[in-house]
Length: 357
Image (cartoon, rainbow, N blue to C red; front, side, top):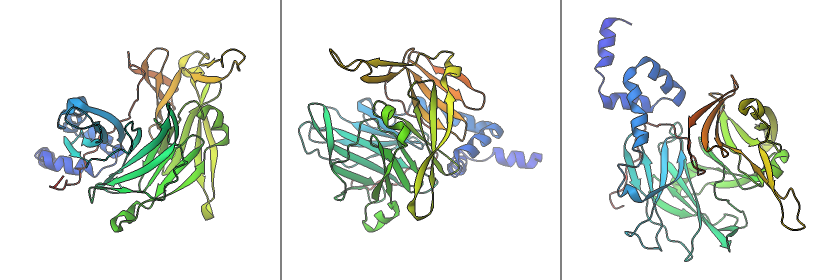
């Protein structure tokens, strides 16, 4: 590159740099960071102040994170118990949007709320708010599904949702382009048809069975979705905990689909031990193998970068496992057992918010 071109690139304004970066995939963005040092300042500081620019951020609770956007719930003395208010934030661009209030149907509401966003497909984001039916701590089904769409900035109720589908807290979920997939125990619920919301038509949903080999372990812990080259993957600890099993969903003609075993990732080699699984017994006279537990859980799966992120429950550490090198590295120590979210910065600006909101 000639000197004249280097000077020209150096004179790019921050607005132009952000606009260019917002059009890149994350992989291309990482390549740019290697070549353009100014990009290096665009990451860590934003994450450190992830909620600092949102109103009354001290009252925000993170619910979900999807492709660079963060969904929070806002509850404080400023809101009544009969109101549930959400805020969507983009830490990389320091933007936030207050979502119109929703109103629970009971005095003791339980929700599962999911954010869906993919800037490579659309600048709009979606929020799925499942109102759960419950009794004495037991989830019995879903009483109502609300879907929020940022383009018309309003909630719509899905009257076709099957209320018997049990949506569990902490379910694995992945949004790829115009399709969202989430686990509900032994099944995957797939939402498609998002483009129809411009005409007031809600996304339709259908069911895929999970891999049959995952039923037992999947009843005690959540697995993790991942994607690479447009393919959907699902990862779950093996029953003895010695490995992580990864399946790929093969889609054939006429709507036929099947889970294919992709690989086993050895956790015995990664941790240098094999005593991962233990059981809680069923009490007096109960089955001694009544409840399955594993010392590690899968936080995120990124097969495009050959990485699996893990939480070590025995040592309260957050770890990364490199599939290519079989090296396990510590990311952070002293991490409590809580919900983790994989965050990748997105420099696309949030859709404009209606002035009436």
